[in-house]
Image (cartoon, rainbow, N blue to C red; front, side):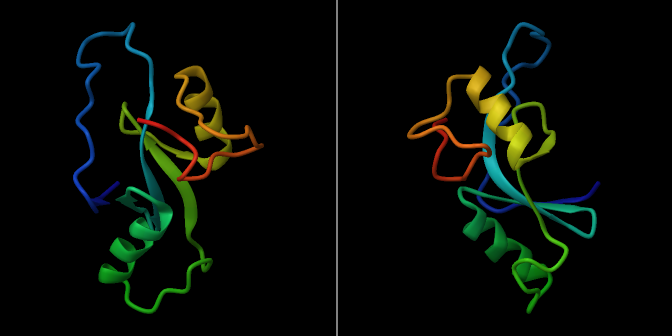
Length: 103
């Protein structure tokens, strides 16, 4: 899957260390098989619209996050990853929002 980058995302720090816990590293959107990263979903949307101008926010766009292992996960799985890594700040909800995790 090809990836378009917004702000530089942190490198995978687990290199060879299987004991390193998976963490959320950025908000992301997936569109047409491409992942667009950003500090928030809004900044990821801005990156997406540089490649696909005029794409409406909700038209076939999957909201999610990228983890320290490079996986794209939806907002529900992201909440579980962030919870295990003690990254959730604020009230716990059924899914993760881009302003609710700490690095």
